[in-house]
Length: 232
Ligand code: GLN
Image 1 (cartoon, rainbow, N blue to C red):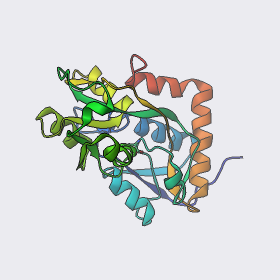
Image 2: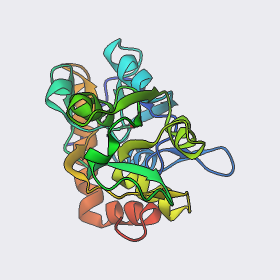
Image 3: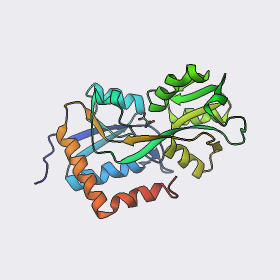
C-alpha cells in the first residue's frame, strides 16, 4: 500500500552551499546528494516538492516555524535536535573535523589551537563542538553564516582553522581547495531528513520507504558515487 501525501506540494528547506550534499552547478542549478535523493524519492513515492536553499540555520528556523515542511541539509541527528524534530532513517554516516590552510605545519592537535581563531558555520554541530571545547584548549571562535564564507575566511587568513563535516572538507580537497586536515575526525554523526516534531509524519514515512527502495535497487550507491569518488 502506497502512503498518501497530505499536501499538494511539500516545501523542503536546505542549506545554501554544502557540497557535495547541495550546491549550485556551473549552470546555477542546485544538485548534490541531498537534492538527488529527495527528488528521486518524491518520484518513487508520488509526492511533489519545492526546494528552498536558504542556508542551514534558516532551514532549521523555517521548519520550526512551519514555513517549510521538512529539511534535508546534511543535518546530523543530535539529542538536542530530537527535542524539536522527528528524523527519518539515517541516510549518510558523517562526522566533523578541523581543517587548516594547506601548508600550515603548526597545527597537529587541539592543543595547538591555543590562542588561535577557529571558525564554524552558525548553528551547526561543529559550532557546538567548538563552543564545548574552547575553554579546554584556549581558542576563540568566529561564526560564519555560510560554508562559502567559512572556507574563504580560512583562505584569507581571517581564521587559523575551521571545523566542518569531513565529507564536505574531503570534497573541497578533491576539488583542489588548499586545505589540510592534521587532526583526526570526530566520528559518529548521522545525517537524516527532518520534520518538525509531530508534523508531516506521512512525509517521513514516504522518505523512509523511498530511501529503502533506492538502497534495494542500488540507486542509492549510484547517487553517492556520482559525488564521492574515493570514499573520503
Ligand atoms: N552536519 C552538520 C550539522 O548538522 C552541518 C550541517 C550543515 O552545515 N549543512 O550541524
